[in-house]
Length: 263
Image (cartoon, rainbow, N blue to C red; front, side, top):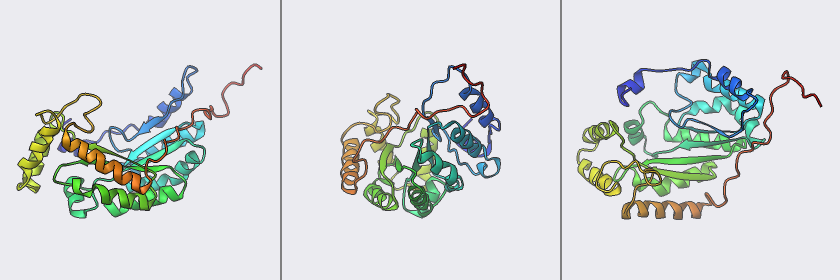
């Protein structure tokens, strides 16, 4: 599908996701490893309010005591605070909230129909208060658009209770290059050429570099400057001071009803 209108108008649901997950977890050879929700697409899309697919998946994970990490920009995650806190209290859950800007106008331009910055901070606050290890992903960082907000975003996130933070530089693979340049011309025509020139500086003269290890951050002086600014402010705020505790995998169990061992 196109990452443009197709992505917003053609919705694909997996109504049997929880059932399939249970089937996988029940396989004798299954090896426990944390499951990540929200990596390719948000686990709390608006349709989740009615479908409750993510909630059903979380119920299975609670039942099996299975580790899970979640990335979201949606406030609907607070609906599942009961399940998330139960998992978190056993060391089985962590959440990262995507926080791109504190400017409501820019948020509407970049991420229409998503939760407002203040709402995302409320999500962080309530998750942290419930004992769920919570952090932010500041991304995408876009030169001349939201890069001036790095320090202020980290500040309010830490104040809301975030423990960790990471960042991602804007990536423009395949059709996204053309879509983004069209977006720039519509919203920021005065700085479009500056943004694209900087993006090419970050990617060795191209709009995108898919090489693992640098596709998320880019290379060169600007990438180094962003990295230094981010690390300095995070250190001042006490973010990322300690290595994150790995989610536990030793509590896994199959619910009552499976065949009991011979001895």
